[in-house]
Length: 381
Image 1: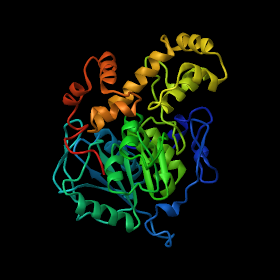
Image 2: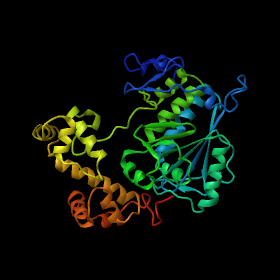
Image 3: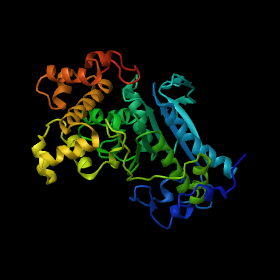
Image 4: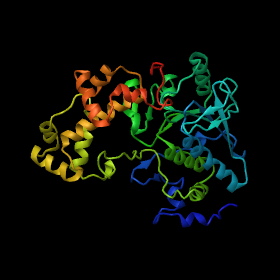
């Protein structure tokens, strides 16, 4: 049973209602940033035929270990839009390289509708994958993927799907969004690509989202672009999702060793952590950081300890170890290369700090990793 259209008022946040998301103005998202206005013609199957009822077909290319929540978060808003309107405006198809069932990260298999080679024409195609996702037969499969892009489909990725999309060369010349938990690993694997910390990144006809919540928001905007903002808001209310985020909203990241998110820290601490994150491979001294912030090293130390409960030096080392762990779990780079990437001249020093931080060596961590995170194949294009 559907929810009445009056339900859109019940889920508004303050004065944030359906009118906030009208086509006549830029979308105002929760961060106060503004997402670019998007034309309906971007998604319509035939923008030259305005009298034709719109129909959008979305393909989802599944790789073993894909996050199940990302797939359901993408499909459910579209399904709800169909239910509310009593139409089949949106349809979707599950695709795998060989047409066989694909096991998700939750170890639940999903039956594909077709092979990649036999995929129907789609308006949008999203790759769903763990960071280690690869084609068994990369040459023909990447060719099929590039053909879909050449034929005008919007091609994108959710969460770890950016890894196989980048390996196919379809992110070359485009900026993309990567989930914070493996952004360092992605940057190391694809240093020539422009990485964004946005939840949603739309660069020409490449749409990338950082995770399940982000693809849900993106599909709400697809509903708005295809139909209208009122319906988008009602769909959001079906799922009790009143705050709709757009492109340009930065990901929420944890402030490690603290119960706050990074954007909730005091300015001096937040800027310090940002400088730490920007200088993992060539660590700065506390005096250098204090100089950049225009404060004394003593003041920096006191402020940091008061907020984080630890010294800035320890926090800096732990951030470097977390970056190293991304590369341990999401790549097959040798430990010596990982050590160099996080600012250690020798592997021994990095391994000692890694063990102190995580209770096991990088080698042990890699051996015990979730098999969906990394494979024995080289994590390179």
